[in-house]
Amino acid sequence: MAIARHWLEAAGLFDTQFQLYGWEDLELGVRLKKLGLSLVKVPAAVGYHWHPPFSLDQVPRLIDQEIQRGRMGVLFYQKHPTRDVRMMIQMTWLHRVLWGVLSLGGRLNERTLAPLLQWLIDRGRPQLALEIARVFLNWYNVQGVYAAYADREQSA
Image (cartoon, rainbow, N blue to C red; front, side, top):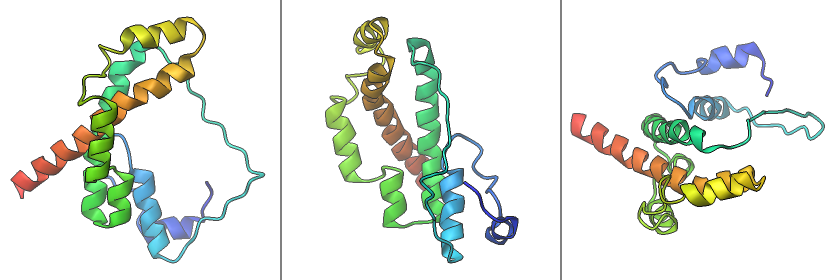
């Protein structure tokens, strides 16, 4: 992404309250949009984001990231309490039910799915293993959102 410095300064730069993983870029995007800017897509511009092949040793870090993303999602929502932000951070009954059903209420998790994930990885399908792991990773994210929201309600 490219943006003129004066627009970043007008929006207030990145918010340093986002101290954990997630949402600081999209939160800045909401503020830029409020200034009247719009996203211009340039299909010819190519960007790369490299990730190592998925392995089970990455799972604890990914779970922690999802919990952090849930916590920062609540901060994002606190700053911009809109339906769009609620949808982005998955703080809706629909997301709670969806990921609850898909993960069987958390029973499909890093422990119960480890044999299947390792089997896929061993057969050269690490990306498929990661996509399956996203079921329990999203469950952790949604749980993180609701835990952070409850914490904020208690401290308010």
